[in-house]
Image (cartoon, rainbow, N blue to C red; front, side, top):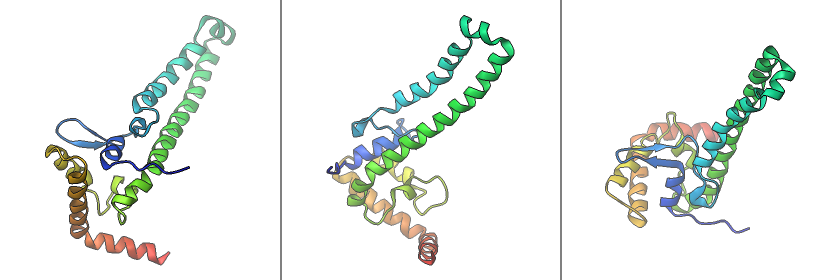
Length: 174
């Protein structure tokens, strides 16, 4: 199967949201621009699971069979399973999006790891969203956005040269 080549605009719209003043990383990546399920549907699914569980356990038929104590115990046990399921669904969704975007990202930014750019911790690219916000404020799209982000990544690498060198040394020692 041939890999799809996504534009930078499409890639960034799946992993970030822009509210007019700042770009923020999405908690649940949006597959809709990639031809998949939208993040709103994933959120709706996650929110509906506890409600469906409550309706299933506390309806008249099941509640009369179980009684109040067992119904509460069942609800708590199954709710913990639902929470684990929700975490798994979000994890699988986000990893799938990163895997889909990886080849396209490598064609535009061959030396920058997408996971490092999206990381929340101390990485050389911790200012990625700040630079992307500035690009959105300038209404950059397509080629100008790519050039701006390439320059931004170069700037971030220069500003954090020591951290980048330490990370490369640690990677080479393995």
